[in-house]
Length: 54
Image (cartoon, rainbow, N blue to C red):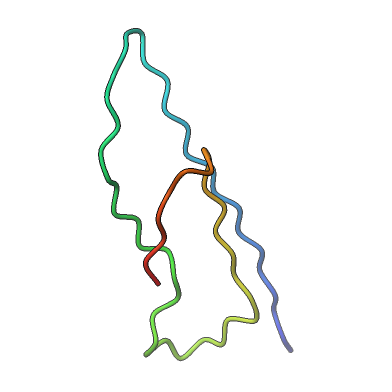
């Protein structure tokens, strides 16, 4: 019996005063040594002015 799971995660930051943005490190990619096959994954970041290092 095969089980498929979908996961959606949203992180939102809201501040009560002006802040400056700094780089964030987010590690959400499946581990290469994972025994569980990952059929697909995606990452969407806003605002669009960002850098992704895969």
